[in-house]
Length: 569
Image (tube, rainbow, N blue to C red; front, side):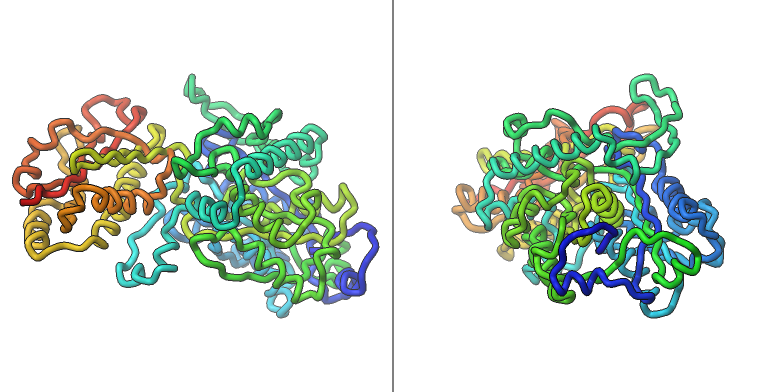
């Protein structure tokens, strides 16, 4: 990206800053505030309404007739129902004519940037004159295990493909371990992000980029519905220090370094960018805010997906013949402090050039919106500090939506039995709870199926499988029960000791040893269910969705998986 301001230039930088009629330019850019998922200002606002507000604002700010908008692309990682209908409805509600086409795009955390790139390329190809690249995410409504589907076992035989199932927190731990990034450095980076964002917010530096939006908000204490104006990022905290962050427990591994304070926040928000050619902007009397130069994408190993910016940035510099010194500042998404530090260190970028007004650790990371949001922020930073050329980059993970930050998975191995406990936050809907349990079962079952069985064990497992359905929903009046059954047999005699522990630990590792997944204890009389006596081993559990109490959905749900192997002769 290049923006208006003055600065010394190398020959390559001077070429990038040259103005030509066929340049792809940005004439308007706006974002909503970024608010805390499930807690913040947009917790009771649907994503299509947030998106509608920014779509309307982006063309009204420059008095553009919406009939001139040819196409819209919206980055969205967690679309309701898996389709683009919400984005279409948002555009229509925003006053954009039915003739204007729209699509959604999902490149995970880079979806908003991909949407802008798509529109820029359409303009460059002469397919359209005006287009909007946007992004939206309501992680309040879409984030969680319910968005996860089952995966082919044959595909998962490929190690890299299997690594795509790793929760993002584990990929962060992998980056920290592989590149020797200490907990102390991660906490220091995160604290600095909060401090920069708090300072910028106090100085009013975000006001020009944020669209104030009226929203309905339900007070969780009184359940009274209020109308509020959401006009500031509510995840920013003053007074955050490295020492304070050092007190937080690791979120993904017992001895890990990633936690809620040095990872991006679960957030809601939207952003939109209006693009056209410079000649078209002149024709309509529109002021140019910046020039879209080019973009690049690079694949990296899924187990360390966070290193993406370290390899994508050099590629885009190569395409433009620019050097790192030609770039005035960088907007690099802070999915995790570990990956941001690795990327900055690997490229040798001065830290004072990175996320000048703070990054996603402090502001939040509404997945589909962040790529577009960083463009809006970057243009604002350029105006405030005089930079002319900036780079917008982020890592892209396959399953960032899998991580529940408030969950804890616990494994205990005692006398051949293992108990895995997971918690579904009480505020989640019953449907989402059930979908979470299905995901939990599918993930655990995947690892169970990787173990080796003797012929006798296979026979016994087959017998049990005929007696146990994967998920049993037994409706008894106003009480609904869901049960999960996972037969598990490990064949080697020594598995009673270290072998068994290792097998179970591999299962827990695959589940990310995540915090926040939950803990509803399975029935205490589980043996009386008859499964253990019939099969000799069990991995089963149940939880009640309701017991006649109308407030059941406000109570926490705990699920406990008990895994036993048969006694060896």
